[in-house]
Length: 223
Image (cartoon, rainbow, N blue to C red):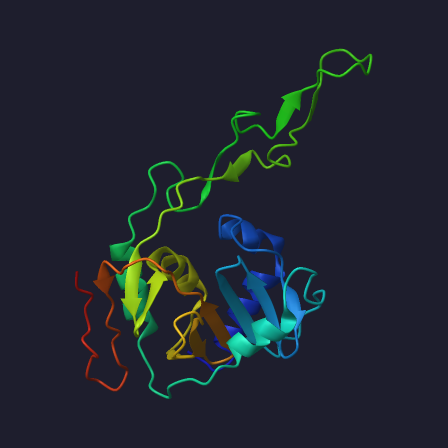
């Protein structure tokens, strides 16, 4: 894959509103942090390095300094196979039988139509208005909160976040971060960085990544 391919594909995903729906609505709209164009859902943040994209600055309520600090944490220098990570995440993360992995479910208020029958005193005959519960999308957040605590490089992270995050990963990747158990694990590839926050739960299994050097660092996940 060309060096610019990951940047181009990630930029395309983050720069279009449709991309947020493609992720099941789980990430916010893109914003700019010094040196990166980012998107986050609060537990995971992805950034494109120096992306030439017109997006607003980091919104109120988010710390641009913290996000940049996470995305610029040093990496190990050892390259791992992202396809192995993607295959493992698909195998180890069965989808919720309600939302099927999208983290969205049908809005009960409008029955998925996005509109409800008007009951106001507007004087008009029967008509429909935008559903306030789902903002006319017909979907609301699923309450499954599905999580699989996994030991990943000495920290416990939610495998569901990895399952969703790896859709944004391209090419070989490296691992980095701070030894502090409260700090995120950082993934980095050509033109992109991502950080996943750890969990406090006890891990049920361990993921051992496949090294691109030929010898796998374990190569398989184990219970």
